[in-house]
Amino acid sequence: MTKILMTSVRNDEEEAIDAYAKLHHIEIEISRDEFHPGTIPDLTDIDGLVIQQTAAIGGDQAFYNQLAQQVGQIATRTAGYDMIEVDLAKNAGLKVTNVPAYSPRSVAEMALMQIFRLLRRTLEFDARIAQNDFRWAGLQSREIHSVTVGIIGAGRIGGTLAGLLHALGTKVLAYDVKPREELRDIVTYVSKEDLLSQSDVISLHVDLNDTSVNLLSASDFSQMKDGGLLVNASRGPVINTDDLIDALDNGKLHAVALDTVTDESPVFNHDLRKTGVADERIKKLLAMPNVLLTPHIAFFTNIAVANMVDFALDDVLTVLSGATSTHEI
Image (tube, rainbow, N blue to C red):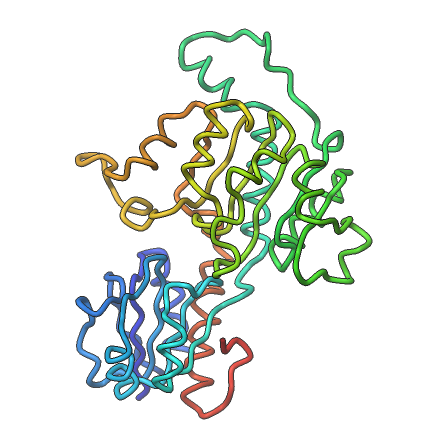
């Protein structure tokens, strides 16, 4: 019987995993740990491997060569695959797959909600109410059809968000290195510089790669409208965190909603009530009144979780059968 190892398994994934195993007559072994050279369980009887994490595996070529002698592939049940040293894995002969479209709607809906929250200034109202201050003065908000939203990265998720915004009557600008013809009726493609200068709200939906690290830094923030709003539902390192904090401190940015931040792995999805947060930049962001921080949960819906499990396991069985997955990187 085919046996697959899934790492970093959460309780909410187990129902989908059990259902898949029964349907396909396979055995799925689960581990709560991330996949790193120092945490690898026994792979002696394992045929396939599925991971999920934001922290890099951290393996060298020797590690991947050894892994290739035990399993023939690595599947990540996420859209991003920067946690895998892909070049090293491929050099070792491993097939690497991801789940590029588990549910674009899940992340797009979260981004839309955060845009609404920033526009309606709920952060500021919440802060006042916590002090028993129920006044309205100074917190007039804007309706979404009266603003311009710029989307950086109009792929599956960004394109879905564009459709939702268009349906609400919002003017949508988009910047993408690969413009999609099917979106031209609902977005206006512009340069990155024009998007930064013309948008009231900017929402980030790019993959993390060498070209997207620090995609937004001090020089980019300086081109934005004063008092601009920013949403990041992609990956933390696409924003230079120190420059972001400066832009929030000096008022260039009015407020931001961050579902992901640099070096989030030791913090997000961990109970730190006793120890507190050690990362100084994340502590700073948490303390800022104009930052809405959520722990990388934009994907975390019923449909997305089931699809991430099912699609990743489908890819494993495809590769093990000798076929080529359409999701191979």
